[in-house]
Length: 550
Image (cartoon, rainbow, N blue to C red; front, side, top):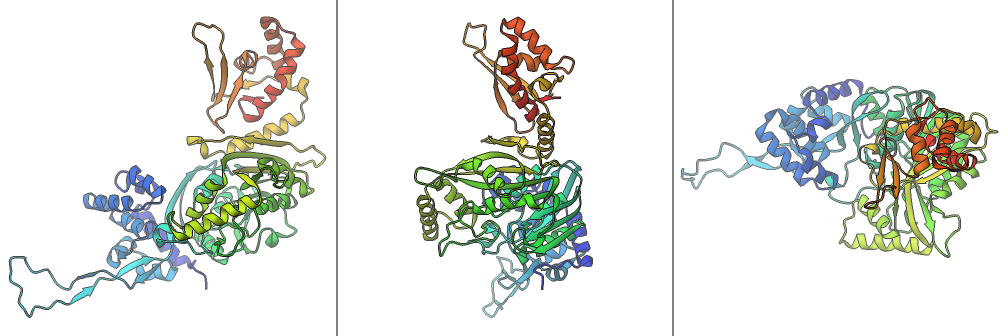
């Protein structure tokens, strides 16, 4: 029997109730619900501030009551009075929600007086009854929360169900836990390239969030997972949000799609590096059962055989860097191109490393993620296991980032390998990067066919989001540092010089880069051939990252 039901009639009632209750991201994060302060505490893993804010909101605005009840029940994990849940789900009702597998009656209900309280001034007869009845309450069996986003298709809002998290459970997660939309999931969703395709694959679908995103531009999506629980949640979420065209298959990695190819593959694989020791939990949603970064290496090495010519694969991953005495193959982000080469299918490789952690910080992150709190014996035991594993294998750093792979249409074409490190927060640029990734891939295709002379013959235009910063020593007319900054995309900063900055400033699409370089050579009194040789690779990079457009 599925963990959650996909009965169409019941889902239609649930959908109607969730819509009419105002159970949305904007409503809950707004000032009439828990607001930004409590929302930030919730993001840090603390629910008390959100609970208090919701209670205050209900007291001052009864219109938020139904949304608050659903948030307290399904997001914060507090049992709610059955009467309140019936009010919040008037069409579905508690019985319908129970049939869907969303809730259960709570046997530990709070006692309430059987009748109206006696006034304090009135004497209490010695024989007065003291019996109390118990008001029925309801407990959530799943986490159900609103989710909204903007992509190339437009704005959309869904509801996503998954297993209850650490906040609601009050302890460590079960090993077959099905994760909802976490930070990594949202990141990958924002990276998905907006390209209409025929067939797509979501490898390790979890709660189904990536498959649902990809279905917005793919005619048919295959979503695989090794976990039957995960596939149950994924099917429920697709049905609740009326998303068609997704086929769910049970199995490990590429086994369910043996011999098949796809135009687009996305994966948020179980990339977390976990010690292979007894007593260390192996969470299905994050642990692929392999040593170190071998799981990500396996996916990268095999995905080429499942990409159609021109197909793109996008995934998140961790990679290890070894110190002295460790494996020479453990070379951080640069390992990814080695993994791709093992597959014997030529692939363009683009890795963006977004974060680096030392072994201690990495261990702390993922032990907490499993619901084990610092200061406990279990935390210290797991900490020892993680640090011991890294020390044995001489691992000094663990990187995290984005991997984009593309199978060239013409396999005789020499693959492009691009490894870049962009550490630190990017603010609003952290989401919605799919269009930038696609534009960069298109630029790489264009540049692949241009030698330096052909590139300099083009008429570049500076992108509208590019700005320039200049720094001077006091009293000096010549800048000591010139920096070109990108407002969109990955918000890159590129150190420039006088000649490159002047080239960018003059790139309005009217003059060729060669003509601009010739004029600059005269102005700067330098040899034109040498200046062209100096500017060509810098021009190529600026076109690649989108600061200049051809």
